[in-house]
Image (tube, rainbow, N blue to C red; front, side):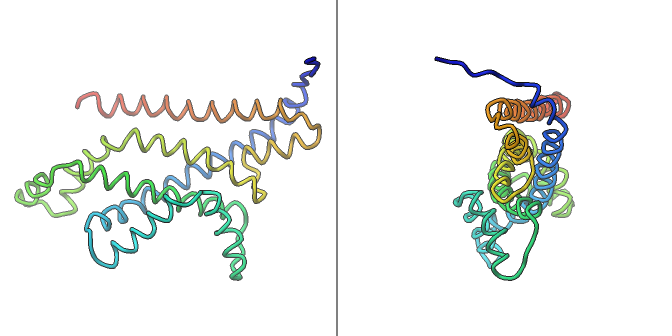
Length: 221
């Protein structure tokens, strides 16, 4: 017979701790996506070249990032580097691993976007006297941006959810903070229902904001 008594006041008493964890989750998501976006473009261009040492290095990065679990990547950064004498905290270990993971996915995403733009457009820009940088900036990248926009938004959500793996190495992001808070009262269900609600709220907020940005950026296209 179901006789469980919900004790929600215990959760609200720990609300500041949960919000602090959510803040760490947002920090890791934003920082990892920002760094990964910058790093992914050179990898995408190197992969698109199809030859050379830079292409091989980019391929190794992309294949390693996309074909190994993010949790294993976190372990490699946190424990692997520690075994080599380079000890870093859980925050930067998770940030580094998720950035590595995001970069691999974004590089392939950007490469697909670049391949979707007809190569004749690059040649046309060059024939007009534009430099390669100007051609990419004014002709190629605006089209790539539209092609990869919504997959990019999905990657933001994916990065946010992956940050929960930081709990395994003691990071007090949202899941870690929730685990710590519920360990006092053992009201696991109530605490993690609220944590799930916070994850959902963050994800939906990202999606709503993305739709607003898309409407403003693409409505004239």
